[in-house]
Length: 87
Image (tube, rainbow, N blue to C red):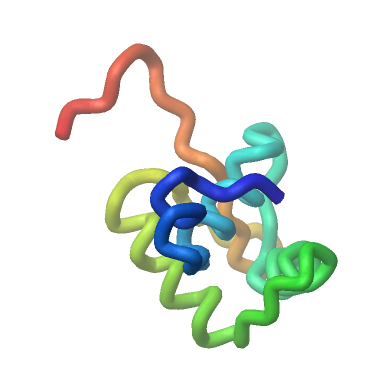
C-alpha cells in the first residue's frame, strides 16, 4: 500500500490515511469495521476495532466518508463529491 511523502519523510504511517485509502479505493462498495480490520491486516497494518472506529468517526466528521445502517449493520463508504469540496 503506497504511503504519502510526509509519511515517507517522517518514517511514520498515518493510520487514518490508510483507512481512507482502503475505503476510497473502491468507491462503489461499503465496508464494515470488521471488513476494514481484515483488509488492513492483509497489508500488515494491525489496528484494533476501537482505533478503526475512532478513525472512521474522524473521517466522517471531515466528510471524507459516510455511514449508513443496512440490516442492522453499519457500513462506511467513500463520500463522492462533484467538482471541488469547499474547506
